[in-house]
Length: 444
Image (cartoon, rainbow, N blue to C red):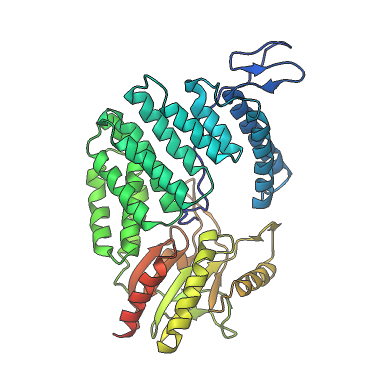
């Protein structure tokens, strides 16, 4: 499961394909892609540097997986090595003497080398090239958005990406596919980082542009368009606009007719928000943390309750904990309660094949270190099933009851046990929105 950095949890740069190192060049030659060959072969072009760094990453990741689980620490160590390789390689290339046609690839290598300022300079030079036509400018701008999003997160970085998109939007709609690619990249980032304003702006723009596409163009951008509806619905629902979210999801199949995966993506989201106003299901688990011994079930009724689905591996879930803790302190003496819901996964960090008792102990330490003292339901790890020759994803009962598709998923339940809000993902602005709703429900 994701989240809502849907996932994931950090944004992954969509790479532009670089040229491969020529496999048959003889010592002393320079191959067609600008790679100096021989026993001391060193890349001598942006494409060569890109390929060398990419090949290194792929090969090391493959080797690491052959040795065992690829932990986040190990992957980060490999990417640090890749950063050094890219930096050493690009140091041999003159930015000022690089042909305009190679500047976007050079910018990508600078991003890999953790040199964002030089990447931005390369993009600026590419955009300033004389005689640049609309199609080429659009492709550079669309690539620039993806490259900027590969840089360290900051408000300045996001603002730069938005400027590139604004410049792209000012071009004629003959380059609408590049516009959709750029808006789609930003929409994916904002969804991954749970920034509602960005999600709403770019999803809305994508939906508008989608109406102007030819059938062939719609099919080529199908998933991007479907996710615009899905992301916009989730953002609206998280801001207490559930009816607007449901209306959007209900009309999506008609407006997206002919595209693959519409039902697969839209229907689970629709089913989730149809729960708003319905009775909240009891939370059940064979083991609990921070609850009386023997607890196996919790009925949400009787308090205004925040329920959060979470996991020890989920970065966005951790980001929500401080705000949830502050909400608890603010309203606990007024009839507000918090319940966390998780499950066993069989691992914790780099530790694999853990027994339920060992993982539960690790969970207890983890939540205690993050100041989470609320009751935490820890369900069994569900087993996958094979139905009709197909593997059916494993889902535990709690997740099925609440239609969980990504975490953190937060529900607000009123005193009568009715679900009043479902929020997928979390950013700091959510805290005051939740506080306002909790205050109103406590006054009912």
